[in-house]
Image 1 (cartoon, rainbow, N blue to C red):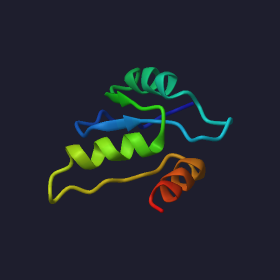
Image 2 (cartoon, rainbow, N blue to C red):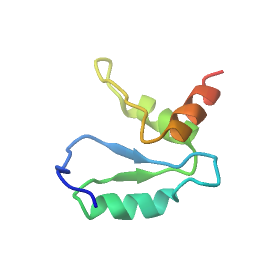
Image 3 (cartoon, one colour):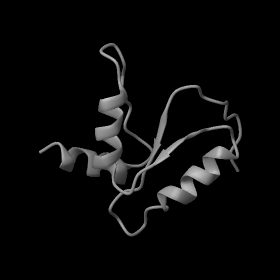
Image 4 (cartoon, rainbow, N blue to C red):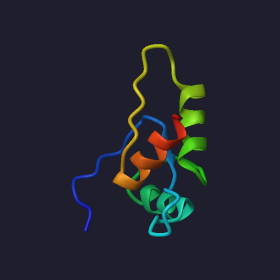
Length: 79
């Protein structure tokens, strides 16, 4: 049960980790839309982060999270 979710005007980059336990990014996107969260779906964390960097302004902050698996894929992509 998800409660207390508010709509967000910020861009959301739906993605999944490389782990087989990851929830499909397109399914996550559909789930998020049910709560007013909109954005694009990406097959990899690296692709989502690349687009986030491209879209971000000089004073913007990019948060990478959702699960330890997503963060681990992000850190691997930075090497």
